[in-house]
Length: 216
Image (tube, rainbow, N blue to C red):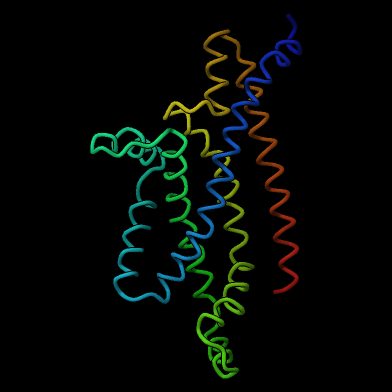
């Protein structure tokens, strides 16, 4: 069997792993982005108790490795009676991890808005929620797009950690085929797929940044 035939033979299995990787990726972005934004607003404008809770959250989840968090969610919590499926455990770990980083990104963006804009909105009769929704948040999103896009690309690479909780993601499937056939090609295929996905995301997010930069 030549190399091309072998690639075509294993590709459906590797793509099934890619499908799972994509599900975790999308779920993480869907939940982590609003979590980060809401937590950032809480850290900037919330009462002291909320700020303390959110500080503890970001301190813990930014200060420990994602790999440890995956192990904790899937292997440690069952010891105290909390059990998640591999998909749920992984999703929760990724969302909380990336939500913590996005919290600090959004917080920095919110605090970068000039105080005069709050005063101008107040002079126009806007309430604080209206000011945040109509003026502050739109500007914040435009300002933090570059670091958010960087985190979104990093997430593609971090999904490779799914293998540690036994999920048949792209890397785990490639590893299983390699172990079975003792052939390096599955790793090369996985490498190319990771590279293609990351490159496409970099391109897309680059266009998104340029599109919004015209409003600055």
